[in-house]
Length: 271
Image 1: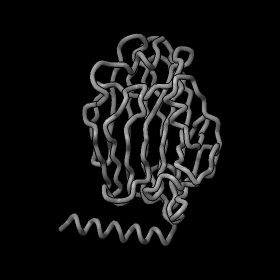
Image 2 (image 1 turned 90 degrees about the horizontal axis):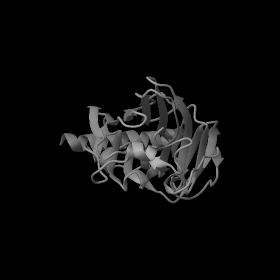
Image 3 (image 1 turned 135 degrees about the horizontal axis):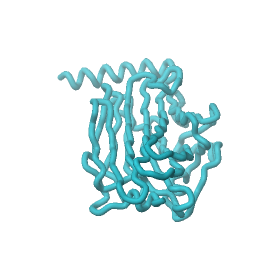
């Protein structure tokens, strides 16, 4: 069995064809920037806004990490310099690559931004970012992976004053400390653990194996992060898909302001 480090390592600079890339549906806006540091780095910066590229950024980062159980001594960012980034639709970006040595895999990441509720079941969501990861075992032996979805939340564009509460077994809700009319709801169906704190990315980028513990380790106000952990055993010829949802939910009064702001932005663009 090959490790994630071997699976994801490659030659060339720490960038991928197609990044940076932005998607939109319309005004529901998501962007991934260039990836920094390769498999041991901190991943790409992101932006999620309900008002297009000039609106407030609710999400400073959204990415995936992983490790092969029994082989890897740390987690690694899901990344290869030769992975191909495409845009299947105006609101959909995809990053994928094949690995053909050791335990062959095909890995696909899909990010889809959509107005309203896109499968997360969060009432009142104004936009939803669907963060998908599909791993196909194209080899001849089973492989067991621990996979981690990571979000660095900054509700309403401010990173240091967010508050967090656990609202379901695999759901965390973030509220802006200054403007509580907006929430960011993180939902990770089927995750074995979902953890909130101010140093979650450090757990994924340090040099040791880490496992998450469900709960709010730090409730804020702070620059809060959240991650979900999954452990999968994938048989030869089979694939498994993970889906995590990030939903921006305005309170009724804030929703009216959001709609007005969207109309103003749309009018400016038509001019």
